Image (cartoon, rainbow, N blue to C red; front, side, top):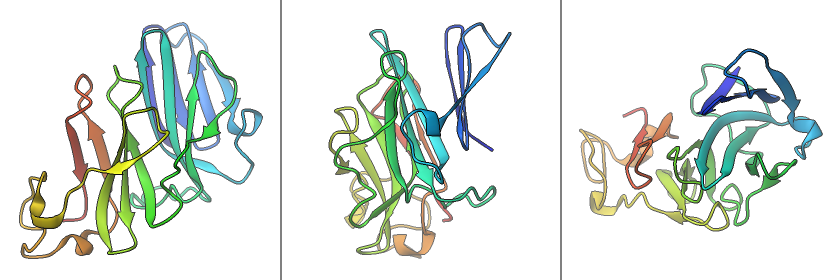
Length: 193
């Protein structure tokens, strides 16, 4: 299972369910770095992965799940969101203001490749059943919901949406989340609608 891949110069970082497969020589050789040897408890698996490189820092985020379910695009994230400054730290840490606690169940993570501070989480908000997109501009220390569903304030949608043919509750959790590689303020989120 591959949760995501990040390229940075000669570096290739492939996030597998149980760790990172890393090459620092354009793929000539790889080493495997298990999550359990770098701060994540056993019994957790990566469901999505994002990375960015800026000012000499390579930062990764992962959402963790209790089981890998390939093909279940809506699952994952219930075990937490973790961050690592790969070239400066040796352990993953759970992000501050963890959005998985409370009413948000994050199952997607994405970021621009050139911005280590801005990261997005696609989630469902169990308090009202709608989708949500959470944004952090301080490396995951705090989060705010930027999916302004009421009256589709900052959302371009098709037939589904607030007071559309079908409201946001119908679509369940996000199934994809992407950020423009060079502009951290441009985000795409897809769902079942």
